[in-house]
Length: 139
Image 1 (cartoon, one colour):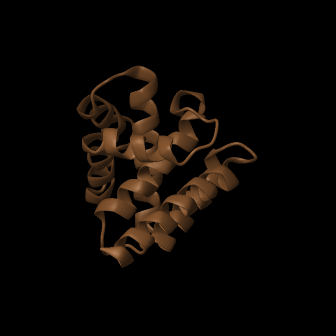
Image 2 (tube, rainbow, N blue to C red; image 1 turned 120 degrees about the horizontal axis):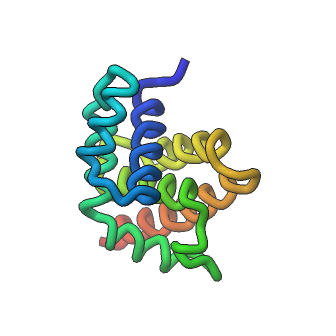
Image 3 (spheres, rainbow, N blue to C red; image 1 turned 30 degrees about the horizontal axis):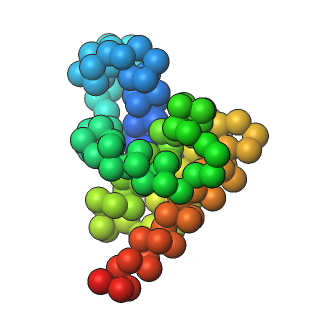
């Protein structure tokens, strides 16, 4: 059985993906999901989607600074949004260790991404985590 937090991350991935494809507002996407599934998204799902959205520029700048020869637009939508979710957690959810955030999104990449997605997501988040840890030590 999937943990509540993993389900929340999966749901956040689906909502962020749908938003990118359809350009619909989150409220509309969520309303349609509630009608189709008969369940409200969890508080953690809501926190993730709006957290990613509200900090999108900072998160995307950080991703771009740590990718070699990969623009955000060139990344698969699933990978891009999993990295965004992981980074949001690493930057703004202090109660979640970096390793947990990385492991969770890597596991989702294995399920929802392409063959190399989990390695790609892990590599980028691992590089950023190392830099974030270094900056915390020196500050």
